[in-house]
Length: 118
Image (cartoon, rainbow, N blue to C red; front, side, top):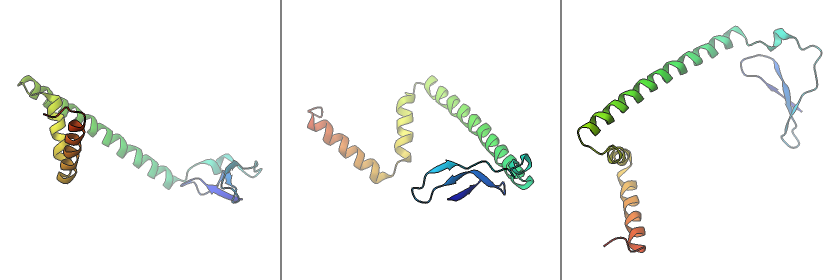
């Protein structure tokens, strides 16, 4: 059986993978296992903290952008624009031109097939 290793910890984990079927199982208790060995190294702790800080900062930025988008859509709505159609236009603009044309052709085909296109 192959021992799994916890990322950044520098010690063998408590789970093992059985090479015959690839299943992961609880490893038998190791008497030499100590609490100190279960702690991330200081370098791993630093990297973890860095990842968390970056994610938090990006989540804050995302929330700010979402609030700005909400304001722009509200402003457009107050001036009489249909925000549902506006969102669809934005989605279509982002789409590849060939893909958009293919989608429009399929929509026309399906509509004509059910008699909805005059």
